[in-house]
Image (cartoon, rainbow over all chains, first blue to last red; front, top):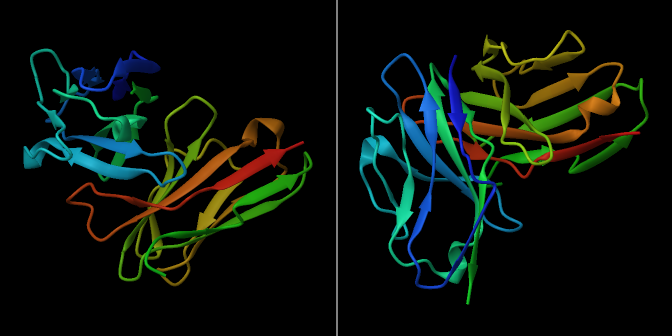
Length: 107
Length: 114
């Protein structure tokens, strides 16, 4: 079955510390993975997709097929990074989301 | 408007009542999705439209849930005989193309069933 697992509900760090939000997936086909973010009082929006291999707001994510993971990383967290982060897997034309991780960055 | 618009933003109803939730997608977006998000959970897929037709309705939990998109733009999610377990935020998203995987979400309709 297709599944996205985000094991941490909450991740708290201090400003300037490195951040890694974990995401594991289960999918029999060739995976396409995404990270979506929801800032306070804002809509859910796309942060990055693995196909683009891009860095957005200092965040990167590498698809590791061997470990079936797509962890989101940032070397130096900022207070404005505080938000809910959802990992998502494309299954045909829809996205399956994980349960999300709340990132809190303290000053 | 520039973004996906959902109405109402909040709906409180009594168990057993009928509810309609409306979604107005971004102009020109042919793909439209409905998700449901319960407290502490991620968005759960309900149904996806490509144009006027439901391309995938595998996420609808039972036959009390139904959605339409008669003219390929605005969509309505309809819930009959509501139950307390239907309480959630119902999210609508639209996409210009299913290829990119980028969904543009609305702010959601919060449904509370008493």
